[in-house]
Length: 136
Image 1 (spheres, rainbow, N blue to C red):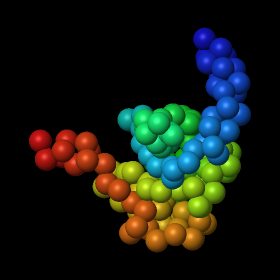
Image 2 (image 1 turned 180 degrees about the horizontal axis):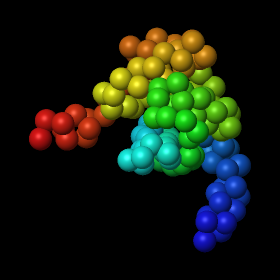
Image 3 (image 1 turned 135 degrees about the horizontal axis):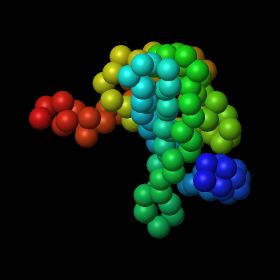
């Protein structure tokens, strides 16, 4: 089953890359990480959102890679940077990075600020669902 899923994923990569390149509006990036309790496995889900020409939200889960190493901001930065490169997403196409309030998100955004030369304060949106969860 895993081989089937990975094979289909590889088939759809070029069409997703083309769809992102054709998007008329800016792209929004979101991600979330999970780590096993023993710290041996870390996964990072990377998502992208944009409005299509009809004004409908289009979203893709771009990847769910297992990370080597710990649940750290610099590791996230490498994952996000690699995903942006893989899908040929350039600085001019980026809008907001939607993140929760975790400190590691500041670390990865600091890294991406250097790589893509943008103002972090103008490109980060806090996840409202995460904030509401903390409040409740």
